Length: 110
Image (cartoon, rainbow, N blue to C red; front, top):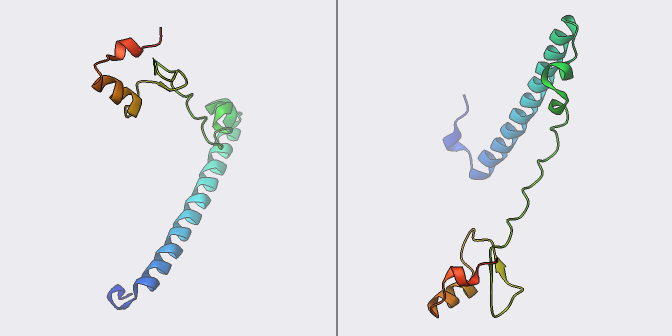
């Protein structure tokens, strides 16, 4: 049994990194084995895995496409190049306009 209390922080960090790599390697191996087993089971029944789960299952390896940026809903009357979608923190120009008594409706893009 390993006595972790006697190990230095550096030794523990190195051990953690080794364990993380080992876990990732085992997970990859298990995924490959599961995929092979699923393909074999489908083949035994006269199908391909793609026929059973759809062709999208094989193409999901890349990153998902990020959502399109939200369209602008408000425009700064002093500087029309400054816009805001209404999401997230209010920009400084919105806060300043509100301090001056303007409403969001006055800055809304038609």
